Picture 1 (tube, rainbow, N blue to C red):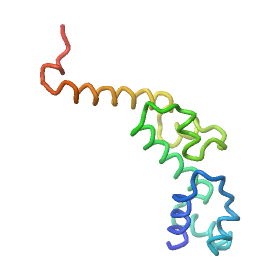
Picture 2: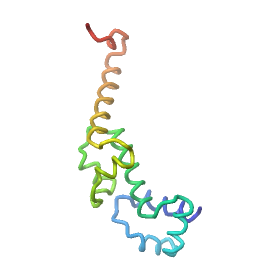
Picture 3: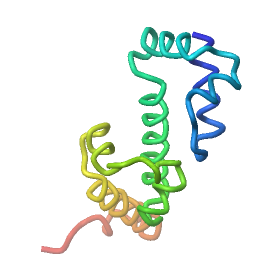
Picture 4: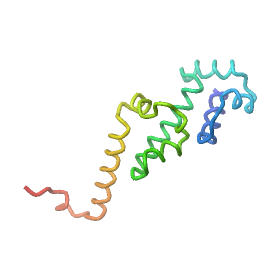
Length: 128
Protein backbone atom coordinates (compact mmCIF):
# COMPACT_ATOMS: atom_id res chain seq x y z
CA UNK A 1 0.00 0.00 0.00
CA UNK A 2 2.82 2.41 0.83
CA UNK A 3 4.38 1.98 -2.61
CA UNK A 4 1.09 2.83 -4.33
CA UNK A 5 0.45 5.75 -1.97
CA UNK A 6 3.94 7.14 -2.59
CA UNK A 7 3.54 6.86 -6.36
CA UNK A 8 0.08 8.47 -6.32
CA UNK A 9 1.52 11.30 -4.25
CA UNK A 10 4.32 11.66 -6.80
CA UNK A 11 1.72 11.77 -9.59
CA UNK A 12 -0.11 14.50 -7.70
CA UNK A 13 3.02 16.63 -7.53
CA UNK A 14 4.42 15.96 -11.01
CA UNK A 15 1.39 15.25 -13.21
CA UNK A 16 2.21 18.15 -15.54
CA UNK A 17 5.71 16.79 -16.15
CA UNK A 18 6.61 14.11 -18.62
CA UNK A 19 6.95 11.25 -16.15
CA UNK A 20 9.23 8.35 -16.97
CA UNK A 21 8.08 5.45 -14.80
CA UNK A 22 11.58 4.02 -14.46
CA UNK A 23 13.03 7.40 -13.37
CA UNK A 24 10.16 7.93 -10.94
CA UNK A 25 10.65 4.49 -9.42
CA UNK A 26 14.36 5.15 -9.03
CA UNK A 27 13.75 8.53 -7.36
CA UNK A 28 11.32 6.86 -4.93
CA UNK A 29 13.74 4.01 -4.23
CA UNK A 30 11.38 1.39 -5.68
CA UNK A 31 12.27 -1.32 -8.16
CA UNK A 32 10.21 -1.51 -11.34
CA UNK A 33 9.20 -5.05 -10.41
CA UNK A 34 7.95 -3.92 -6.99
CA UNK A 35 6.13 -0.99 -8.58
CA UNK A 36 4.40 -3.14 -11.20
CA UNK A 37 3.54 -5.84 -8.67
CA UNK A 38 2.10 -3.33 -6.19
CA UNK A 39 -0.12 -1.65 -8.78
CA UNK A 40 -1.24 -4.95 -10.27
CA UNK A 41 -2.19 -6.30 -6.86
CA UNK A 42 -3.71 -3.20 -5.26
CA UNK A 43 -5.09 -1.10 -8.15
CA UNK A 44 -5.30 -3.78 -10.84
CA UNK A 45 -3.74 -1.42 -13.38
CA UNK A 46 -0.21 -0.61 -14.49
CA UNK A 47 1.54 2.50 -13.15
CA UNK A 48 1.17 4.08 -16.61
CA UNK A 49 -2.58 3.43 -16.56
CA UNK A 50 -2.81 4.84 -13.02
CA UNK A 51 -1.04 8.03 -14.15
CA UNK A 52 -3.39 8.33 -17.10
CA UNK A 53 -6.43 7.84 -14.82
CA UNK A 54 -5.06 10.47 -12.44
CA UNK A 55 -4.66 12.99 -15.24
CA UNK A 56 -8.07 12.21 -16.75
CA UNK A 57 -9.75 12.63 -13.36
CA UNK A 58 -8.02 15.99 -12.90
CA UNK A 59 -9.18 17.01 -16.38
CA UNK A 60 -12.76 15.96 -15.58
CA UNK A 61 -12.81 18.11 -12.44
CA UNK A 62 -11.16 21.05 -14.22
CA UNK A 63 -13.71 21.00 -17.04
CA UNK A 64 -16.53 20.76 -14.52
CA UNK A 65 -15.20 23.65 -12.41
CA UNK A 66 -14.04 25.89 -15.27
CA UNK A 67 -15.98 24.93 -18.40
CA UNK A 68 -15.10 28.13 -20.28
CA UNK A 69 -11.46 27.20 -20.60
CA UNK A 70 -10.41 25.89 -23.96
CA UNK A 71 -10.28 22.14 -24.39
CA UNK A 72 -6.71 22.12 -25.70
CA UNK A 73 -5.56 24.32 -22.84
CA UNK A 74 -7.20 22.05 -20.28
CA UNK A 75 -5.67 18.95 -21.83
CA UNK A 76 -2.20 20.50 -21.72
CA UNK A 77 -2.67 21.80 -18.17
CA UNK A 78 -3.17 18.29 -16.81
CA UNK A 79 -0.22 16.74 -18.62
CA UNK A 80 -2.25 14.97 -21.29
CA UNK A 81 -0.92 16.83 -24.32
CA UNK A 82 1.56 14.05 -25.03
CA UNK A 83 -1.09 11.34 -24.66
CA UNK A 84 -2.44 10.14 -27.97
CA UNK A 85 -6.17 9.78 -28.30
CA UNK A 86 -7.14 11.89 -25.27
CA UNK A 87 -10.71 12.30 -26.54
CA UNK A 88 -11.14 8.54 -26.92
CA UNK A 89 -9.52 7.88 -23.53
CA UNK A 90 -11.87 10.39 -21.87
CA UNK A 91 -14.91 8.74 -23.43
CA UNK A 92 -13.66 5.29 -22.45
CA UNK A 93 -13.00 6.39 -18.86
CA UNK A 94 -16.19 8.38 -18.26
CA UNK A 95 -18.63 7.12 -20.89
CA UNK A 96 -19.23 10.53 -22.48
CA UNK A 97 -17.77 12.31 -25.47
CA UNK A 98 -15.43 15.04 -24.16
CA UNK A 99 -16.79 17.89 -26.33
CA UNK A 100 -20.34 16.91 -25.32
CA UNK A 101 -19.27 16.80 -21.67
CA UNK A 102 -17.70 20.25 -21.99
CA UNK A 103 -20.87 21.59 -23.65
CA UNK A 104 -22.97 20.14 -20.81
CA UNK A 105 -20.66 21.69 -18.20
CA UNK A 106 -20.95 25.06 -19.92
CA UNK A 107 -24.76 24.85 -19.99
CA UNK A 108 -24.79 23.90 -16.30
CA UNK A 109 -22.51 26.85 -15.47
CA UNK A 110 -24.82 29.17 -17.42
CA UNK A 111 -27.82 27.78 -15.54
CA UNK A 112 -26.11 28.29 -12.17
CA UNK A 113 -25.20 31.86 -13.10
CA UNK A 114 -28.74 32.59 -14.27
CA UNK A 115 -30.11 31.21 -11.01
CA UNK A 116 -27.77 33.44 -8.99
CA UNK A 117 -28.83 36.48 -11.00
CA UNK A 118 -32.54 35.56 -10.87
CA UNK A 119 -33.29 33.88 -7.54
CA UNK A 120 -37.05 34.46 -7.76
CA UNK A 121 -39.18 31.38 -8.47
CA UNK A 122 -40.87 33.02 -11.47
CA UNK A 123 -37.53 33.09 -13.31
CA UNK A 124 -37.55 29.29 -13.46
CA UNK A 125 -40.86 29.10 -15.32
CA UNK A 126 -40.71 29.09 -19.09
CA UNK A 127 -43.38 31.06 -20.93
CA UNK A 128 -45.96 29.03 -22.88
